[in-house]
Image (cartoon, rainbow, N blue to C red; front, side, top):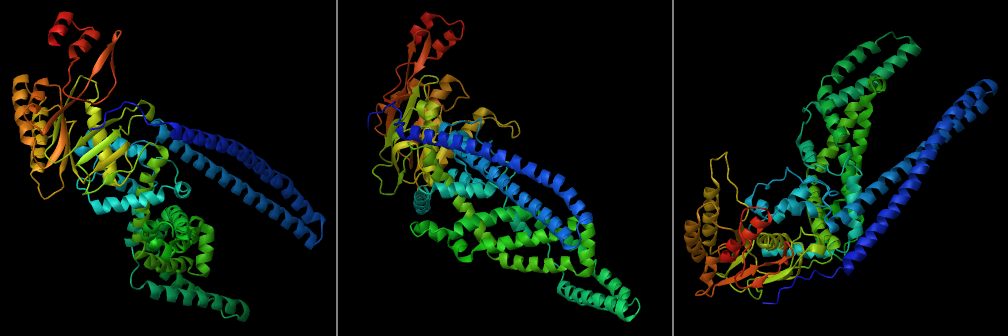
Length: 622
């Protein structure tokens, strides 16, 4: 096994990226200040046009004859409309710059593990209560790497991290697409920009499931088309009879046709109103989806064949056109928000019914393809999050996952993803074949539990298809099983000890699955819930039951008596972490070493905390 090292990876690349991000953030901040000054200037210009132009138009109306007065009024209106357009463009540019700066700030926060800036952890993810998720802090790891703009992409990324049964074909396919996405940072950021322009806040992700519900929601009755045709006929009759009554003296016959029109119009209007309201509620989401798909459908991915195959439904169908039409029709339906104008127009023509017919036609066109487009975007979002890990953490590497790997598992200079790079200590470990087991000993706070999570979280990243925080990681597909953070349960009446026994029994059961990939298990302090004598007897028997089975793993323990199991069993190895005293404090280097731990520190910690422990007791214990 290579000699472990505590040296952190080279920070040259990371430093250069940090400086580049900081320069971008400063540049965007300065640009925002300049743009906001222009927004304020054009806001004042709009006000000035109203204050000066309106009186000028009134004076011209009285002082000038005919067309010159209309010319002045037209110029005032044109000047105001132009000022409004320019003002809105500058305001839109300010919004884009704010979001672009926030994208850069989040990249910097992820690279520096600045949790104060990162969006809050999602508590609505499916799988948060899974024991592996709790043991390996996968929710926190997910928070670090989750760049997704929509809920479905964020959930998919978490599902990949939590996958219990690795599929080699799927892993390699994801790795290939992540590799193709990695150099496309600008495209990934532009997709985020397009999505965030339609979101009120960074912590609020887009919920595309609402679009699925909208597609399957209320549909008009079979009489809708008949009613629409009758309404169109009656609107023509209303206008014709009104003109005839006005010009030919026919009398108020048009009132009869108008009464029929109004009665028929309100027959299905409540249902139409609900459908329009749904479309209006989704109009912003539809615009966002259209902006995102437009970026994907116009990009040339000929140099990225895997991405090209994934994006084929979007590039062939060009969905942005249809999505923009739905948004436009929903905008036409917004006439309902102006009751006076709505009454006038709908009395003349069945405006709502016409727009509903257009909307239903588009819904039918979207019904077969929209779920597939949403699936593509969901996949791209999750893959982009994995690709961004390499941007924000240049020290990562692409793991080798293969059935033909030399040995079962080998990690060279592997570090914890949730420890900032300048403080991260990396170690190396190797498992040659199924049945191997490591007994990991060490003092309190020496790094045993963190090392277990280091291995587990990096394996979760590797099997998700992402990069790992290691100089090199080579592994076969392995199932993960953990027993690190076990808790009791008052609701189910389960004590800590019983919960631990239940979890450890599950590990033995998983090791019996010879037809599945080998198991990689990580166990921290077995049988903590019982006395020393029974814990030692139970631990010895349990470790002997684990070795030689269909899996490999690590048992971390304080029980130094257990290290003797390796004396007569070549499948069991001892490794340890240690500490040393510097002045009046305890220091740790977090380096993994071969052999059993030569020291303990519980009594020293007690004494340093001011508890009544004597030096003689410490010397006797060591």
